Structure formats: C-alpha cells, structure tokens
Image: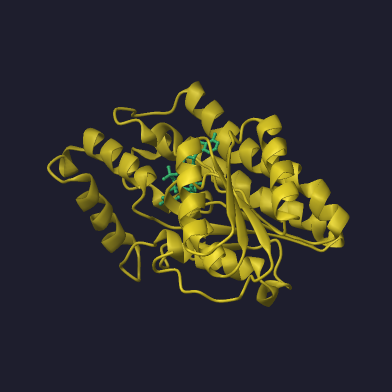
Length: 281
Ligand SMILES: NC(=O)c1ccc[n+]([C@@H]2O[C@H](COP(=O)([O-])OP(=O)(O)OC[C@H]3O[C@@H](n4cnc5c(N)ncnc54)[C@H](O)[C@@H]3O)[C@@H](O)[C@H]2O)c1
C-alpha cells in the first residue's frame, strides 16, 4: 500500500468499491485499506480487481474481489451479497465505475446516441444500481456511508478545453450533473436511516480516462497536434488549476475516507470538489 499512510481512521469498517481495477477506484481502495477498512473491490475486468485484492491482502489488509458490470443489477446484487457474507457487513459504499463516453474515442467530434446510452447506463444507472444493491442492508442496520464519485465536470462546463469541442463532452458532463443531483436526493431519502450520502468531484487525474480525452483533443485540434497526450494534459492543468498540479487517485481516496469517517458524521448531501481549485462551486 505504497504512499497510502496507515491510520486507524476506518478501523473495523468494511467497504465496497466499484470500478476499482485501475485509476481512481484502485486509489480509493488502497487508501480505505490503509485506514483499516476491509475492502471488497469489483470491476468489469475481473483479473484487475483480483490483483488489487491480492495486493491489499499481501500488505496486511483484508480484501476480496468480484467481477461486476454496474449496468447489471443482478451482478451487483450478487457481489454485495457475497461481500456481506464474507466480510460480515458493508458500512461504506463507493460507486466509482465510470466512462468518459464520446471523448474517449480518438476521432469522435460529436456525440451520438450510443454515447448517450452508454454513458448514462454506466455513470448514472450504474451508480443508482450500486446504491440499490446495498441500500436494504444499510437501512436494516441503520448505518451507512455512500460516497459517489461524480466530477467537477458535472458542475460547470469549464472542463471543456476549447470552445467548439463542447459537444463531445456533453454525455459525460450531463451524467455527472445527474450523479450530483442523485447524491442530494438520496441524502434526503436516507437521512432517517442514519445513512450519509455524499459525492466527491475529482478534477483532473492522469488515468487512462484522461489519456483518452487528450488523444481526442490531439486528433481534433491542430494547435496541439505536435504535443503528446501527457503534454496536452499538463498544459490543461497549468491553465486551469490554481494549485497547478493534477490530483492523484490517493487524493480522491483521502476525501472518500474522510466522508466515510466519524469526523464527517454531520455531512450529508454534499459534493466535495477535489480539483486543485479549478472550479469553485
Ligand atoms: N480521471 C479523471 O480526471 C476524472 C475526473 C473526474 C471524475 N472522474 C471519475 O472517476 C471515476 C474513475 O475514473 P478513472 O479516471 O479512474 O477511470 P478509468 O477509466 O481509469 O477507470 C475506470 C474503471 O471502471 C471500470 N469500468 C468501466 N465500465 C464498467 C462497468 N460497466 N462496470 C464495472 N466497472 C467498469 C474500468 O474497467 C476501469 O477499471 C469515474 O467515475 C470518472 O468519471 C475521473
């Protein structure tokens, strides 16, 4: 669990994280484990999830893995049930799995109806399906922490690098706005069960998701055709982030750990930007 400083902030708690095979989800799982939580990780990529669970166990943590497609309620229900059986309970649920949609296709200049469907099914329905799978258990126990991974792209259109390229970002940004509104509404519904529902809105991280965005940008914009995908990303960070540096999966994991901890017991219905100050609402 390199770089994830050990603490007992979440000692005795158990957690589930979707889309944990790589990127932000992986970082979240490693931080939760480093804070003492047992972690059930899932991904559509079964071997990536299994490798992460093995890594956590080898570092002294408690972990299990499942193969889950968040668009399938059945696969989520089975994994949550298996997690409850193996770990005894689920205290913390992190619906993290997400896709960038149209902007993930190098040559795509605009969205099409498949982009809308795919982005909606995974980013919005997948998040709702995950909560639906875990909610009966949390309601029964009158305890739970749901931390949705949204995006600052769901708050303001400033994530769009260039005027004229906005449409390629639309399915993603609209899905993340829906994720934030879902967080607010679910918090109202679940407060009486002592379940906190919050979101973290990451800014920009160098994961395969942002690499795809940069490659799309490079293919469509002659001004940056000579730059590498990473150079395009770095330029974007310098231009938009007061702190001048990208976020890391661990940064997002630390925010999730805080919102899942007792220190945040009075915080619900909030969406916390972890974005170097790029968007301030
Ligand atoms: N990278 C960023 O800059 C950034 C910024 C803001 C928000 N986010 C959000 O953070 C989350 C993670 O992003 P990331 O950058 O780590 O992306 P990523 O593409 O690196 O990883 C996403 C993970 O989700 C999994 N996944 C995809 N479809 C799935 C499905 N149907 N069922 C289960 N798992 C599935 C993938 O296999 C992968 O392991 C997403 O919700 C994303 O929208 C990312």
